[in-house]
Length: 363
Image 1 (cartoon, rainbow, N blue to C red):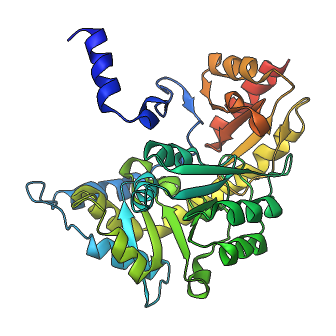
Image 2 (spheres, one colour):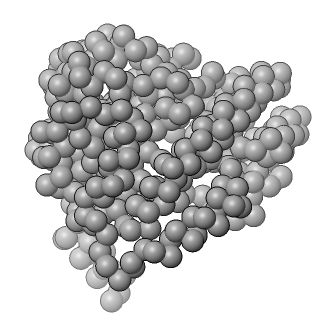
């Protein structure tokens, strides 16, 4: 088929919302120290890894997995102390959870989120043709602009509000009382996205019983299981039951289910790794503060956002990359993220390599 015929067919078949989007880009990290994707840099000890591989031998790959992942679900509910009246739904990463939530909305629905925040809220909303509204955060502090959020709620009456807690890509925790005010004002659902909760020691999980419209979303990716792609959403049983009508059957494969069950039996490993990452985060912040022209922002996540001198972000990013370290360039998003780069907290030696590269790039 010729290129022109393919383009004609695309124009005739695909919705305009899709044609207007750009695909989510993931940089090729081959050969680099990878500090661009908020991953846990640590693997399991060799003896634990061997036990895991031995356990995987029992997986029946010729059979479909448990469609409801009942055992995994039970273990997660026990871990998070989720009481009666609440259920969880599992997704192929948090992204699928976001997609399920938004697919449940009517075509005229509005979705609200602060800006800047996790890009997939907007990406999925727009791909489904939904009205997506950004409410800018306060400059410099990246705190919620509560009056602006409440005004947007009153004007647009969003069906779903997404609040990342801590926020990505800024790393800060929004004021808990401000979030409660938003939940009370919201006419629809409020999803508190706690992807980075293990690094923050803060959660709205215990608030579920106080708000009928509150949902809490989490993921195993940032803990150290990014390759599994498992996220979950907690909320009132009636709401989760409706979302289960949208969830594709067998969306969580048997290897993922078995591995998560195994991992939850060794949760002390994740606790220890998380503590190490938090210590390194503090050391990294202290070092960044001392580099002339660099302004790091306080973080409660496993990454640090930092601002470079005006119009220098791209040059600094490229200079760091040339030295074998890959971080995230956010400056192209403009607005509050102009001149901003983001670095994931890695192992001590990886963090030192980044800091050395940054210092040379800033010379």
